[in-house]
Amino acid sequence: MRLRLYFGAELARYGFGGGHPFGTDRLDAFWRLCVSSGLAERVEVAAPVLAEESDLLRFHTPEYIERVRRLSHGEGGYLDSGDTPAFPGVFEAASYVVGSTVDAVNQAVTGGRARSFLPIGGLHHARRDSAAGFCVFNDIGVAIETLRSVHQIRRIAYVDIDAHHGDGVFYTYQDDPDLLIADVHEDGHFLYPGSGAADETGTGAGRGTKINIPMAPGADDLAFHRVWPRVEEFLRAGKPQFILLQAGADSIAGDPLTHLNYTTAVHGFVAGRLRQMADDYCQGRMVAMGGGGYDHDNLARAWTAVAEAMIR
Image (cartoon, rainbow, N blue to C red; front, side, top):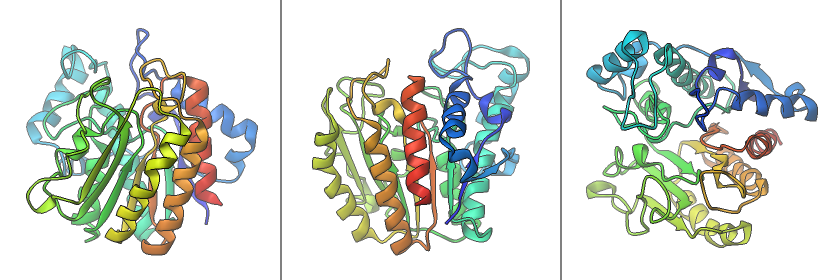
């Protein structure tokens, strides 16, 4: 099954200057390895897609969308308390991330392209009405709402192996019984955003449909493989109709912002296991997003491993 991979200058523009860890050079670092390894010849390269405002409104409030537009087109400043600058054109750059993720979802359901990978995507900290942690718009949330409102797919699995807890997704949907969330992240006692404790399993009707697995600083591949069977058992019991993966590369040893010690083998393993699960339950439908990762060699190798696993 051919993999659709989103690449283009429009996605590369989602990044922040002035030495910010989420720079605009992250996509190029990945693409260079794609070309040198031959992966670029084995995938369908798709141009980025600009989101319509109607796409953004499926998840975000009108007031917040207008604020991002206003700061993007003149006022400048920060979209949050200091992590996420509003550079000129940030509205369009973030809209290309969302639009590409939405296009991947649409292609999976109706376009005959079941699997896609978006290296610049998976902005899991943004809330409906605010930015956070380098994330302007939450493309994952928009994808979930698109699957439901456009394609009538409700039972969705969201798996997040970024070092940071995906709080923008988790707390938005913590009472939603049809969104399965499995989030394996560095313990929030040691890392932003400080959430995702093991006893956070959902609220109300959503209780028991979420698992958070905080990992101790220094956790390696062996530690990850000890907890993964719990994730897979949880997901298979839920029988999802669609799988979303946030494959943040900041969980790999040597990342400048985090303290986990995985190798890129973890990312390839997870993508491969979820690919099999997508074949078993979801008609092959799976979209993966690159998420975080602030060491260029790490993210290039991790995202290449994810893409390779999705086309086997």
